[in-house]
Image (cartoon, rainbow, N blue to C red; front, side, top):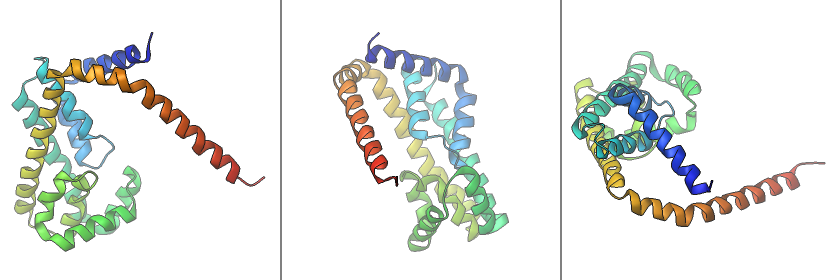
Length: 206
C-alpha cells in the first residue's frame, strides 16, 4: 500500500467518524474550541463542509450549530474573566495549556484596540478564543460582547464550512496535488527532524 493510499484511508476514516458525530458532535467540538481547549476550528468546520458536499449534512445547519457552540464556549471564557478575575484565568490557563505571556499579548490587543477587538480577533488564530478572557476581566458590557462575538464567529464559520464544500467539489485536484507533493514533503520533514535531533545530541553535555 502506498503512502497516498494510507493517507486516503485515514482521511476516509476521519470523515466517516465525523459524519457519525453529526450536528451534536460539531456543536460539542466548537464549544470546546471556543473554551480554549485544543480543538481547531480550522479542521472541524472544513470537515463539516466536506460532509455538506457529500449530502450528509446541510450547510446552514452546520453553520448554525457551529456558531451556537462557539458562542457557548466563548461565554465560558468570558464568565471566568468576568466573575473570577485574572487569577482564575491564569489557573484555567495552566489546565488548557495557554501561557501567561499569551494572555498578556491578548490583553495588550484588547487595551490597544478597545471593544472592537472582540470582533476583529475572531479572524486571528489563537487570539480568536483568548480574547474573551480580557473582555471578561474588564467587565465589558455582556450584550456588546455577545453581539461582536456573534458577528465575527458567524463570518468565520461560514467561510470555513464553505472551504470544506469547495474542497469536496475539487477533491480530485486536491488528491492529485497530495499525490505529487505528499512524499517529497514527508521526506523533507524526516530530514529536518534528523538534523534537529543531531544538533540536539551535539549540544548535550558528555
